[in-house]
Length: 82
Image (cartoon, rainbow, N blue to C red; front, side, top):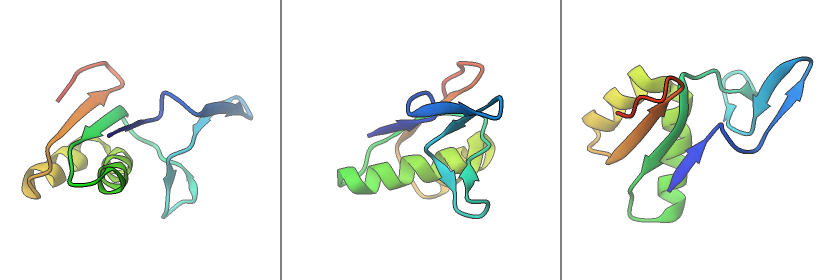
């Protein structure tokens, strides 16, 4: 399952907003990632993990995925894939 900020977005007060909400701020997550794809046992588990990794950002998200053996692809805003 893939999740990203490149779809379901809009402009409000001259700022681009998206549907992935950081639970700590209750605002669109500020991240250096465009999208994350995760392979998991279920679609719902993969969706939750992908959104969580986006919120974490590339540095923390990649480290978390490695430590927890989560198969994931990260697409950064500079279009680099990790």
